[in-house]
Image 1 (cartoon, rainbow, N blue to C red):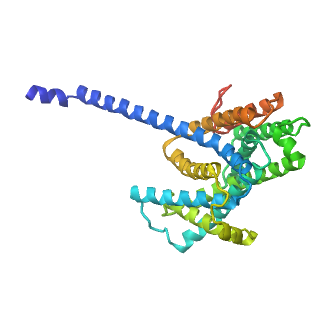
Image 2: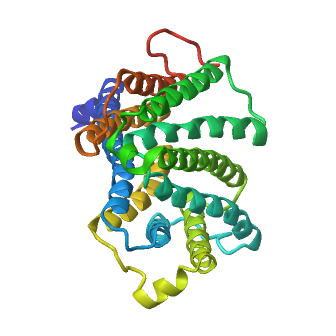
Image 3: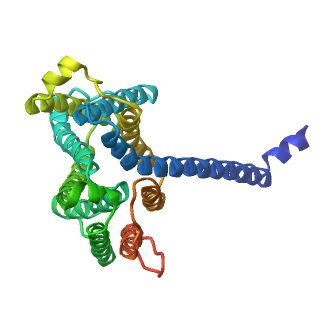
Amino acid sequence: LIDSTHTLCSPRSQRMVWKAMSVQSKGESTVQKASLLFALVLQNCACAILVKQSRTHSADWVPQTGVILQEMLKGITSLVLAVLMGESMQGALDPIELLQSSVPALLYLVQNNLQYVALAYLEPATYTVTYQLKILSTAVCFVLILGRKLTLQRWLSLGLLVLGVVLVQLATFKEDGSSSQRATGWGGQIAGLIATVISASISGLAGVYTEKILKGSKVTLWVRNVQLASWSALIGVLGLAGTGDLSGVWSNGFFHGYNGWIWASACNNAFGGLLIAAVIKYADNILKNFATSVSIVLTTALSIQYFGLELTMTFLTGVVIVCYSIFLYGQIPIFFRTKAC
């Protein structure tokens, strides 16, 4: 018995136990990251496609209600997660904290509404690639609001990002473009482009502002999500009243004109907001950038197959440049080695 105990407690045995535990932990971490990667790719790819389908297959509904619905779903889920994880509710009803949350909530609400506007005119692939301009707006806001400095490599990646988006837009503005362009005309394409650029700009500003108020705040991430969702839903209802759609929603019902595509879009967008929080906590920049690039490729393939997108060399070149710029901005060397500064 003494020998057995001595064997179990020996340094060699302890090292073996720690090694086994380390391997098990590494395996669990790999599975966790793989699951997040799959979920993130699926959500990113489905986002533009589901919104596009909701706009195409149901004209008799108010898109603003879809945005309100997704915020309500996100808020309820965040509240449940906060309770299950035992997060402190301290500051949840603090007037200053609530007031701070109202700003990004308004920005996110406008961004989500512009998403529906943009995809009424653009192919999902064109929208997805162009929306990556949010990286540019985020970088600019980091410099102006948080006072951060960008490396030369990141400025180069932003230049490549803009070049890639310009090539994609030039490809879609050709005379014999996609079926979406033939249906909406150049005016529709320009409207979709403007809506996407504004949405991407607002996304960057909202993200940086949210990061700014999270620092030094007693409010946890999930509780902050509850605040943001509550504000967005409230402002969304006020927006319905301001646009005159509230009376129609009141008489016809909130879910008037809803179908499977609309429900799927709202649930997917709500899930996306929660997924980003999980990625920030459990994953890394490499996984996020890889998932974004894969989703761009998949969205392009599906747009060719189901939305009549005509793949040209100009469009393909733009997609490749945008994907590469995403990795370059994340300080991840692809074709050559660089040092992250």
